Length: 385
Image 1 (cartoon, rainbow, N blue to C red):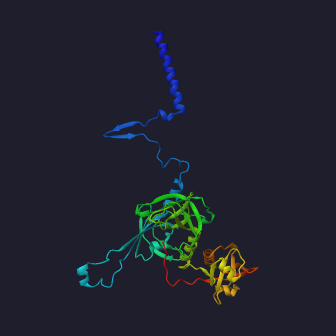
Image 2 (image 1 turned 135 degrees about the vertical axis):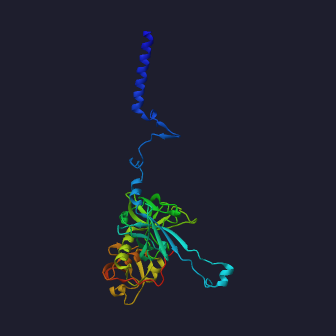
Image 3 (image 1 turned 135 degrees about the horizontal axis):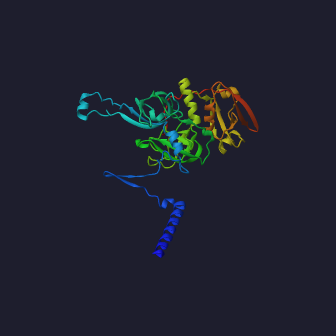
């Protein structure tokens, strides 16, 4: 009996030692959810909720939570166009009431002020008779159009609600290719969606989308319905307003474009303060440098924008700019092409002098140009979406 008892005690000692080692080094091997029968159901003892647990490494949870509350869904309706025979009773008798259904639109927007101001795309709200905004907390409100700027494809709306979540504006000029970003919006009307990607390129232009183009390109998935939504950095700060995609199928192909928040701020301030966006204008006909044009005008500059014509008595002519000059610098920033020159001049304040550097054959000339107010286009439109 004594021998049996000794063997038993040794076995228990070994088992307890093994249990202690496993519990210390591999606790998940012995911890199992407890099953508690309650009526006909089963309750599992689970880990703490994800909302209270720290973000796992590489997660964008904090950025998404910070920014998503300020991103709204925008639904628009527009009266259906009526043909010339719409009021003819005989036509309606034989063919019915044609085109009586209103046209519906879908997009996104970003709340940027506790006063209820919302940034979105002009093409989202263009021509709309009614605009309804749905917040991420399911509240809805009718929106009023404060102003639009078709040249940049931006619009400012306003809603009257209290306790509005607002987004933090970031510094889009500090973005670099390769930085991680998130796109937040309401694609295809399925509900708010967050996608991730990187900054693929900066300063994209000559796309034929807007008059003034300086897009952030990203591979974060952007689809129809995302227009007007937010492009944010990994801290949840607004970097751009999602505007357009390149697609052959109508869906995302990894090439999306966003208007930098630096541009959006200028448009917002102009619309809210003055009702319109005031842009600079100097009255020139610019052209990108090419070997043929350089030979024709006797240009020796290697970079910049060639001026092929100058409006008589315009701001550029009064400042001394001549046909054949090459503008290489505006306000201390180098100019590479016509699109950059257009954007830089438009950003100047009308009536406030700015320094231009011009290459005139072998000479470098610095001129003070006082831009005028850019004339409004005769017909406005958002251009290719």
